[in-house]
Image 1 (cartoon, rainbow, N blue to C red):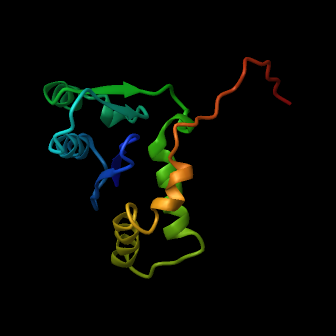
Image 2 (image 1 turned 30 degrees about the horizontal axis):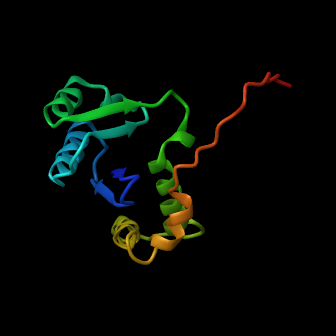
Length: 142
């Protein structure tokens, strides 16, 4: 699964695949975002996965007028989509076993289908623009 969360409208754009997420999957997501017809500048915040940095993805993003903003390494607290994935994992996986891949995928698809309805209230407080930051401090390893 690959997704983008609109921090303004609180809508999810996602691509689900049975294969490994790749540059081609990323390009499909970029195409889906561009097809929304959003106005104004579009910035996609990314977490530095290798497939996001390839020439194919960067060229398509430039052609679609989508700015790719890469977060510093190891900073999932700055990426809203990570909060959504954590929510989905808890809703779908927490203490559950799926006998088949189809059952597992169906549970994920079902959760995603309810993002804008059943889960909207729960996500309101989770998907905010509040980010954990740290004041400058000295850290010592023990």
